[in-house]
Every structure is written in C-alpha cells, then in structure tokens.
Length: 188
Length: 252
Image: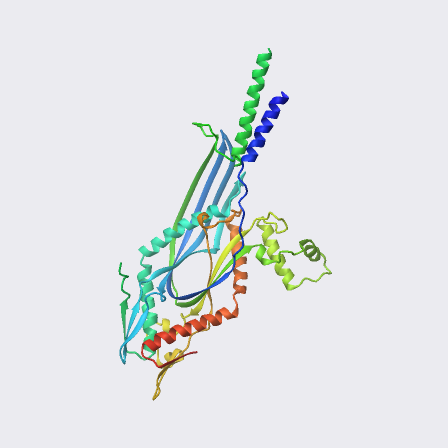
C-alpha cells in the first residue's frame, strides 16, 4: 500500500481520538448518613408481582453485533397511611369528647423488594446487561402499580385504619367520643 | 495501468476507512456524529420491552414511624479500608495456619461478593455502585390494643394506656412497644437520578448486592437512633394528649 495513504489514514484516526470527550469525573464526596424526623402512620400495603422482559439486538449493516435478553420478576409494595407532620391537630370538645383533625391519606412508599428478584433468562452476546437498563423499567413499573393501588382504593383503606388507630388511642385514654375532621385544603 | 492501480488503492483506502468508522460506531467510539446524511444507518438497535404486573394481596400494617436514617453506601469500597493490602489478606486466607479476625472475614465477604458480580476492588478503575438505604425507625403497633378492631377489656387497655386523676390533674401513662428498625428501603434510582457510571449487573447479582448492603446498613444504625425515635414519639404523644386535656403524660 502507498505509504502516503497509510500515513493519511493514521493521521485521520489520530484526529478522531483527539476529538473524543474527556471522561466524566465522578464526585463521590459528600456521601454520608442523614437523620430525618418522621411522624407517619403507615396502615396498609398493596403487593404486586412485576414480570419484566427486555430484548435488544444491535447490528452493523446486516450483521448482528450484540444481543441482550433478560427476563426477571420481582415484587413491588405500595404503602399508604397518614403523614402526621402536616395538618394533624387535636382539640377537646368537652371532658369526654375530642376532635381530631387529620390530613388526607397519602402514598408513603412505592418500593421494589429486591429480595424477591427471580431471574429466569439472561443472555449477553457482545453486550452486557447493565443495572440502570432494568432500573428504568422498574421505575416505570412503580408508577403503574401506584396508580393501580389508588384505583383499588388503597387511600380509603389507609384512612379507615388510621382512624381506628387514633380512635383506640383516645378511647383508651378515657374519652367516650372521638370526632374526626379533615384538614382543610390549603387556600390558593 | 498506473491510473487503474491508483484508483484501486483509493477504493481500498475508502473501504478500509468505512470499516474502521463502522467498527467504532458499533463499539460506541465515535466522538462526533457523522457529517454525512446517510439514508441508511450503519448501525441499528432494536429494543423490545414488555412488563406486566399482577396484584397479589393487601397487607395490614400498623406502624408509627418517627425517624428515618438515610445512608449512602458505595459498594464495595465502603466495606473495607481504602489502603487494605489485599495480597496480604488473601495470602493469609489461603494459609491454613493463619488466623483471620472477624473484621478480616467481613472484608473478605465484601471482596468475594464484589468479585462474583464482576467488580475487582484491587483495581484503581474498579466499577462501583452507590446505594441509598433508608431505615425507618419506629413502633410496630399490630399486636397492641391500638390496632384492635374490637373494644378491648379494661385490663388489656390498661396495659397500654392508664389514666390517673388526682387533685393535681389528669395524668396519662402511655406504653409503646420498643423502638426498632421497621423498614429498610433500598432506593431504586432510574438513570435520570443516578449521576454515576452504569455497571454491568444482571438482576440476580443486584439482588445479592442489595441484600448485602441492606444487612450492613442495618448494622450501622446505632442504638442512639432508636433512643432518638423513642424521644420523638414521647414528644408527639405528650403534645397530642396535652392538647386533648391531659396535664401530664408519661411514656413507658
């Protein structure tokens, strides 16, 4: 081959590598332990099983260069209850009765239960399956089960159970009557 | 003849260059987009995803959470000292006459798991995972009279709340179960919320890593946090029962 042509190709390749972006620096400082105050009454959970399938094929011209196939399942948990930090107050009505102002029930957690992961198929040819690839699918699944749990009435169930807890607390404290009032919606 | 030879070498050079560019595109090495507006792409990716959920069951939960301990842990590097001499430690493990301390075994457990999932802690360019663990601390009320669906006999109620009325006023003695770690949640970040490099890690390996990290995170939550959770519960119940008309409130 013509040495000048070789030199030109090599110079071109050298120019390509010079144009490549610098590797991103990873900042791992500031990782620490934090303690946060909570006041929450979780009272009900809905459990789901999610099955995830991912199939990816890469090709160059007509030739397959990489294949990834993944099939696994895991359980997801949607938890609802009352957040007592916002809008919870108590006021006596008389010696034997008390009014309890409680906030609306809310979804407290949507959590993937990693210990329930069952992997059925994993195939990697020319490509590796990475953590964030299926983490994104799990994140999407969480949104769906959250919506499904709300549609099935998890918030109403959580509210009823939270009221029972609080009613029992005040009945055992000697009150004969416990009246629940919903926290007013914020004025806009 | 010379012209034909020259044309032949030009064609070989162009085809060779296209092959190099195509190879770089396949391995993702191109630092810029091709300036050519190709109607047919050199590389193609076809991806199919399919997910389906099934509702399993409802679970009653009666808990009172008063504290959350959030830990960010780097697997595997947070589970052994940065300057650990791995060669020495691994040699000692291989020597039947050497003694390994409990701490040595813990370091080796982290090392072995890391190696099994494809991470070599001895390398400077080793991969890592940043895992956020949230521990919720509080009280499990499911076996108490507070969670009961029916009215409890007086002697059962008195076990949890006892009221005394004296000339000084009304005093409530409230009992709660001991504070404990009620939940350990491993956060699942999507790619948009995880700023660190991605790691080759099938789900089964992620399960093993997350179980390991959760166990170590549980151990790191100190007794002081449990005491703090109890103080916070006492503060809350005192505020609530005083607002309801009690003069004094004692917890446990």
